[in-house]
Length: 347
Ligand SMILES: NC(=O)c1ccc[n+]([C@@H]2O[C@H](COP(=O)([O-])OP(=O)(O)OC[C@H]3O[C@@H](n4cnc5c(N)ncnc54)[C@H](OP(=O)(O)O)[C@@H]3O)[C@@H](O)[C@H]2O)c1
Image 1 (spheres, rainbow, N blue to C red):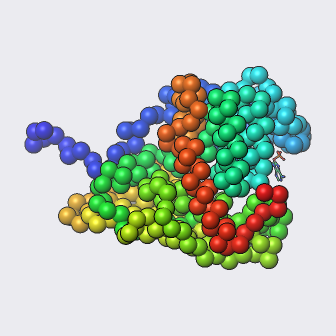
Image 2 (cartoon, rainbow, N blue to C red):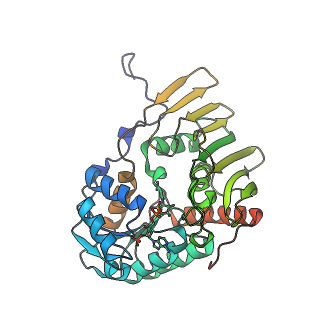
């Protein structure tokens, strides 16, 4: 290196990661025409070579309305008809958590690869059933934990795993949103596996897991609604002798929704909102500092492009979000639920 060469950044910039627009195209089918399905149908055609070729709803009217609004070619009034469509390469499962296992199995049994919204299922046992079905058919399956595919997130995870911060001492991350709705809303309804854990805490937990893997110890404190779903929790994970994570979630209030990783050599702060495309600031104890620019349009294009690349390569899972990763996060959440006393009807 000469004196005029720029100093290499300590945190890899977004350009270090593959451009989603260059991934192969898939013809997606969307299963369930709800809130998040609209976002997927907006971002995927805009930022990737893929198309939304069909949508399936429990109601033909809702499917047709979604198709009209989102410019989708085919609309089906049942999920069975959707997954039977021979013109689809993959199915995006966008129903409530309580239904993910059955809907993923429906698609896999019809020979279709699946991208399943987070939380992947209600429990590790349900997740295991889905992965077993994918494995026996040689089909791709992945949890749509979209943050793990974002450039700023990958860059921070790679730097921390590579030892940039020394030994990790503490991780602090939150996900709180003011999501106070009626008792039948899916977040407040035990029948639909509501609660802050599976919807919100899954982000800080999956973040800690991406950085440190499976914890050695899990503690949790939380509050439950009168129908027995968790409205808020603070979860403490211990990895090894010195590393403690505090993950907080709430559906009663908004929180900073930032994340800090503190190590023996320095700290990384991911700004609000850490699980969305965000900036991160590195502060090392030796005085070096760096700002990583991580904001960009959309977000779901990175996970969708990863699915397209893996399917094109004939693979059944992604190394960025393996079946084991999902299983280990689900196992953490099973233990948190056990400690909080949350059980869902029908699981
Ligand atoms: N990645 C993210 O940023 C993100 C954000 C929000 C939510 N999510 C995840 O996406 C999933 C769906 O959340 P959402 O907010 O889109 O929920 P939503 O707006 O309530 O939509 C869910 C859809 O699922 C279908 N469904 C199938 N069985 C159902 C049942 N028994 N009860 C109610 N709906 C049923 C319905 O569609 P049809 O009637 O058309 O069949 C409904 O519109 C959840 O797993 C959630 O965690 C992810």
